[in-house]
Image 1: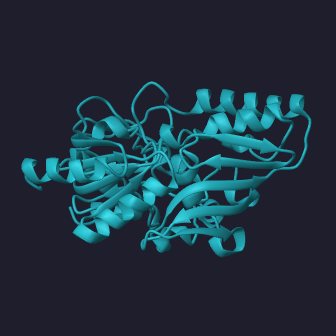
Image 2: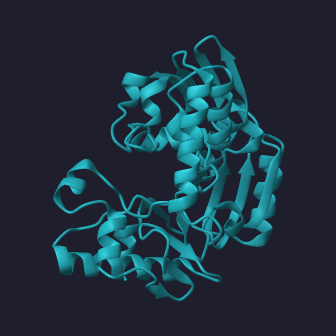
Length: 324
């Protein structure tokens, strides 16, 4: 962990170029699991220029950098992050709609984007209505639901590359695939997204969204902190053993606990924080689930959720769980 004096010094340098910076900010305040130790520095930029300034800063001082939105798919270590956490959030939240074209900031709240598209009579984002998180993270992972991904409607993505240059990438350059984009390997920060959504019937769009939200309320835990789906679900998996929630439930693992972390009794592909859960609790629970499914079915469950190490490395949580 960098010294308090050094962190304050860095904060002073960054504040002149970025604005909102915080020293030793608890990361439990910045993710949906409410787990994680402090970040040496948390930075919340307002525009792409400030993001570029952060990129130049971390390169110059050779500091680890972790980029987050609302942290809905991340498990931070109990130690926190020894470096800079760059949060693309409410300060970069804007939506501009012109005909069938939507331009939105990477910090835009995804359900709000879906609602704005509905009000404009644009279809294609109905599957996003219940996804908690920001647009930048959704595009990075090509997230979505009901076998859809946001990449289906992406035209261009504006990013700030590692060298602090601002680039506009086409959808083809992003190479969207199921829960994947080439942006993940690029190491760039998404700052703006351009979407093309065809005209639809607002009433029909609204009905589909309400149906989706009702299904989510019925199926998924909403009152306890969680990260959404823990394990990756693919069509090949469905054909061979079934969806993760189903096979975990049939393995008798609903309600299984490690410390404050528990397999949700409502949906078995969710791990909830029952209070005071640590990253170690969650990783041990993931390890036990994977071990039991491997023993019963011979299938290797992979994680959709990402673990963030103290040095800022991000990887599927099962990789860290396997080391326990």
